[in-house]
Length: 213
Image (cartoon, rainbow, N blue to C red; front, side):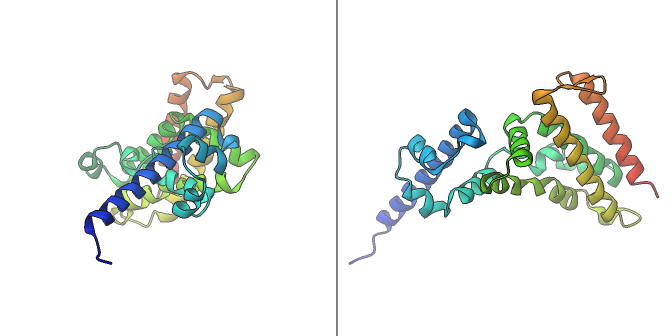
């Protein structure tokens, strides 16, 4: 049988189209029903496909979750964390680059209710799905390493920056989760921008202290 390039290209387009439809269905179910509503049958029904295709293209539901997380805006991108202006970011001092990433991470997570829901689910009821979605949590740390160019500092800041990254991630996750159900925190209303401005200033001070000689 002769190889047919047109047939191969059509098959490739169909495969990509089906994969895109499955990931779109995954997102729709997640938006509508939350993490608890995710399931192979639910996603397959939403996409209008046989669930066998989910296993064929993604291995399993955690594999689909991991692929979707990597290709969506579920986690902030590295460009978002540096302020979407690489040239301006590169002109900053190393300390200001670190500070920018930390502040932008705080704002980015707050602006993502689905991500906050995952953080809450991962804390209260971890599953293979929440763990797969949480794999993208390494992005902020990667961004710090890749874009702040710590090697340009006058001393090795790697350990301090990773400790700072972990601390800011914990602060952000706790405050964002708390906002969902009990928004008052030490006199701060977590639904108000002024409260988050205070926390951004706190992150700035933490950054300065962590990076002191």
